[in-house]
Image 1 (cartoon, rainbow, N blue to C red):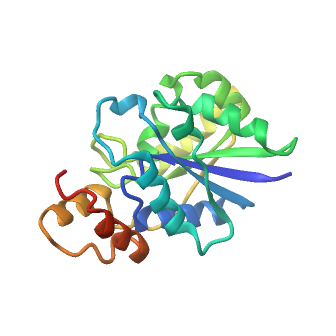
Image 2: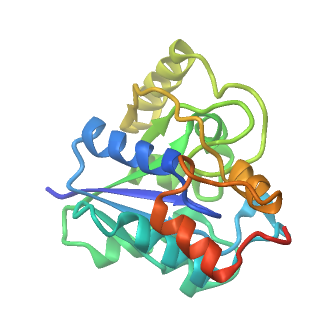
Image 3: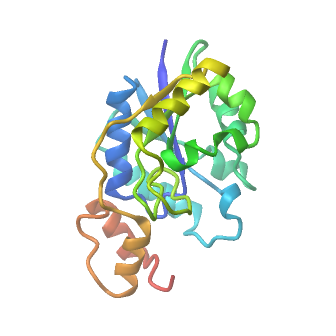
Amino acid sequence: MLKIGVFGGSFDPVHVGHLAIAEAALEGASLDRLLFMPVHVQPFKKGRRMAEGRHRLRMLELATAGRAAFGVTDLELRAGGVSYTVDSLRALRESLPVGSRLYFLLGADMFGMLEQWRGAEEMLREFAFIVAPRRGGEALPQDAAGGGEGGAPEMLRAEAARLKRLRGTEVVLLDMPLVDASSTEIKRRIREGEDVGGLAPPEVARYIKEHQLYVLD
């Protein structure tokens, strides 16, 4: 059985924190492959200004080029409109070999809201989840808004156990150090003419500079 991770988010831009989480998910859930999936429009952030999809997609391709287990899908960008995870997971499942298992990677804060998502009952029944720790101020996988620390480990374990008991949902909780990087900080540094070294992969930093992204954000 192939185990495929799906890492959704704005990736505006992708940063070293995203890549660290992806590596942890590969190992923690014993994945065969992990697909980065840039969103077209997030349901929770309608109207938010983002770099064009083609730029976010290309930055992901550059950031993951040296890692065979990583891939990038433009499924949500091609679909257009608001990107709902349940629709994307259905579409991805149809394109994979029969019997493949999809694991959706999300932040601890978003995990706590999962039952409120569109198609939540189907997702919890049909798909598995990988939950990454969250630093207050930015949900690392989803770049979602909100404060807090994303829930204490014991609370996450209790919630994972509850979903397993009630719905049979498989949940993998990642145990990893938080990486101090955010898309927001990258944009701030660019606006102020500062270097983004250490936050964005070098090839992504070069692409941002070449295309003058985020200068006026």
